[in-house]
Image (cartoon, rainbow, N blue to C red; front, side, top):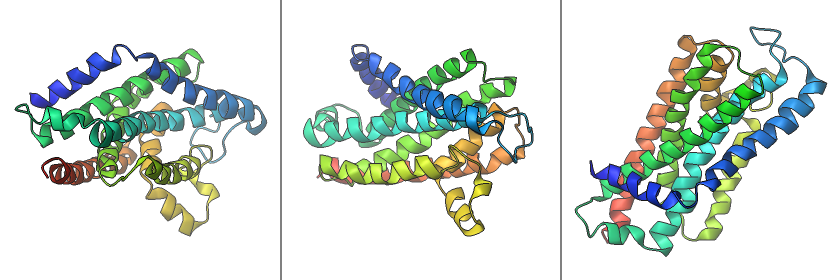
Length: 252
């Protein structure tokens, strides 16, 4: 499969820079220790959850898992891909081989998905070691992270085709940071007034958090259907836009 060649290429490059993945695991661990454990001692248990004994650190951990999957995938298809697309002209060289633009797009999304899942799996090992995992349903966060990685990698791939220079990355941060803060990462959806809840429920990170928080806390019911369909649709749309835009950029 030609797209697998892109994954193999990136693996060969990352064999020299794999400590960067450890840094991406380290970031959510710091958030967990500062907010989940530190503030958790002041908050105690989170009200409104099915299990009233759920601690604040257990509530925050799956949200940080979803954020790690999102950041891992987005970093790969935005920052790293922009350099290959606009600065190094890497893809122009690759397209002199039998590979097509579609192969490049699928290969980059597959690699970003793999990277996001590795970061999430590493963080899952940490939260398990901290004693925050109490249900075997928590293993579902791994396929959940795959789906989150796919959705955000495809969106990142589409977004990077619209960027003109490195300064435009500020627009990505302008969207990512508020989404991280307000997508029920640190508190339940019930704290918002009803009109604002609708806005929050439309955020892709909120749907990602919902996909992981339920299984992590031992609940895996039909409530996962909406996040799964949402992220599949988002990823499919992002991939379609990215393939079309890349075709126009690299073939002109």
